[in-house]
Image (cartoon, rainbow, N blue to C red):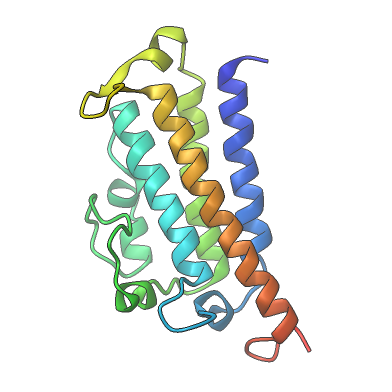
Length: 177
């Protein structure tokens, strides 16, 4: 197995957990927060997709899908390339309200598709290319892609956890008992 195949597989697994987390849920369910200040499924999947879009786009030397492909407008937000969710307040989390789980998952799918397309172009020199010298040791493309996997996997798992709570206790009377 080539390293690019490992990246492709890891990002595909993130896609699957996001689908398991949000598929078929109502807007009220994807906005549900288990307690004040907690993150919703909508915010978690939006955020992990924004981080991936931001980081992989930077590595690939291209504009972010959030800005150029109309995703910000679809979410009713400004196309600010720096807004990836870091430092969001509870009010900012609550403001992430895609019209449906289908839109949320379409956003995630678009980002992962773009990432996987980029992986096709990776070679050994590309994966070892240093992209950030502010760390010791400096960060390579490969290390950054693994960092995105780590961040995305944690947030996808959190979204799946919230889905489990929704299924047990019910939100909006559609799931749970």
